[in-house]
Image 1: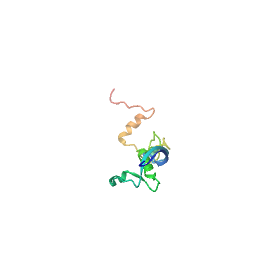
Image 2: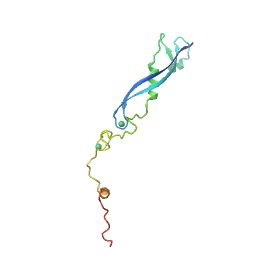
Image 3: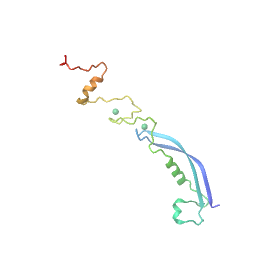
Image 4: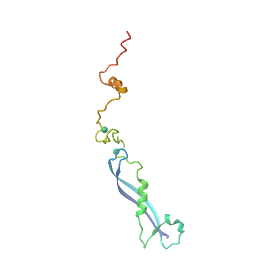
Length: 131
Ligand SMILES: [Zn+2]
Ligand SMILES: [Zn+2]
């Protein structure tokens, strides 16, 4: 026996922000833990001290182990949902809350013709000079 082998499962609550819409996220993750805590009076290479977990007065500190496991398991780019539409590029509103909102904005004159053509009932003007 050179120490205590800790194995277990930890569940942690998560709180964060969606990377697309900045909306709040709450979630839960479960991580598996395994770590050998060696007795502190053991002779070990001081160079490895950073990587070796030690028992302190028969107590072991789970926090670093837990923190590392949870951080590794965190999603890289958390989303509030798989189809989060993000924010409106015009006003920053959350599109998930207000998916149909629109802006009355002046149409670039170069696109105005296209807009007329795409409106219901619009007819494409034929070239009048051709007869
Ligand atoms: Zn979102
Ligand atoms: Zn908007």
